[in-house]
Image 1 (cartoon, rainbow, N blue to C red):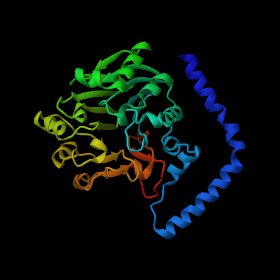
Image 2 (tube, rainbow, N blue to C red; image 1 turned 30 degrees about the vertical axis):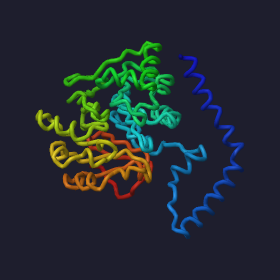
Image 3 (cartoon, helix red, strand yellow; image 1 turned 45 degrees about the vertical axis):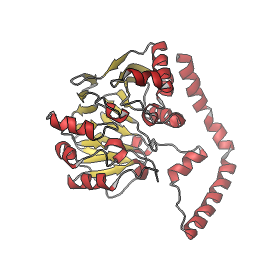
Amino acid sequence: MAQRRRTARRRKASQGPALKRCLPVLAGLALAVLALFGVGEYLGLPLPGWDEIGRFLGVYEPIYAIEQSEGAATRVHFIDAGQADATLIEQDGEFALIDAGLAENADELVAYLDAAGVEELSYLVMTHPHADHMGGMDEVLQAFRVGTLLLPTLPEETAEESWSLRALLADAEAMGVPREHMDAGDEYPLGGGTLEVLQGSVVDESLNDLSPILRFDAPGLSCLFTGDGESAVENAALAAGLNLRADLFKAGHHGSYTSNSCAFLSAVRPRFVVVSCGRNNDYGHPHEAALRAFDAVGAQVYRTDERGNIVAYVDGKGAIHIAADVYDDSEQAA
């Protein structure tokens, strides 16, 4: 395993000289891209963002948000995983990863974790067994040491029917990574912070509702995560009278109208909302109803489809800042 990780890092280190040799080709491609932009703009065609072009050319390095927040003891990285989810929590040099995006983007996810300084994950958290949340987990297990794999309640038929889930659980076992199922009241220490399970899985016909409600509390910052939990999850939390209050809310189900109800958001009262969604995605995320609900509680909204990677962090004076790969001069410390 250690040899495998070292090999991966040596492969990354060797890419620098190769990139230099490709610079003339990249310059030609850049001119072609600019020409296409001009034609596309003239014809009124939808154009890709520069981050998408960078990924296509293999030269995109998502480091601006990381650099802007460097040195903070508390950082929550909302990684731009396209129409998928991956959130890295960093507290006092310890890390937890909630979900791991799609399998086809696993290399980009591992590169981001490397850039953020991850060598070991205290926890790798699966909110529910959908491909856009668990797809990159096997690659993460191979690239980094993992303390514990945290899982939602998994109905037996789900574990039996999902080949990718069976493979992941088998790989974790082969690597000696212990796993735990998350139940309400469970607490997982992370540096000077705590990841708490406020509500366990709601078992119904929807795998989305297996998503537990998690809150991360650290000095100066609290964040609430509901995965892809929909109305059944939110309504159960409200009926139970849970304390959902948090500074930052990761929008449920990529900003879908099936989540993010006005009643739920009124209980959370977030100052910031981060939506993880892909540019021009087929689902129309975030939905207008969700955006109206965010606006109704006065939350500032940040979207990965518009801003790339987004990092919430706390400075030495206890103020919350938001850094993003696509910078906005108007943003100030909160």
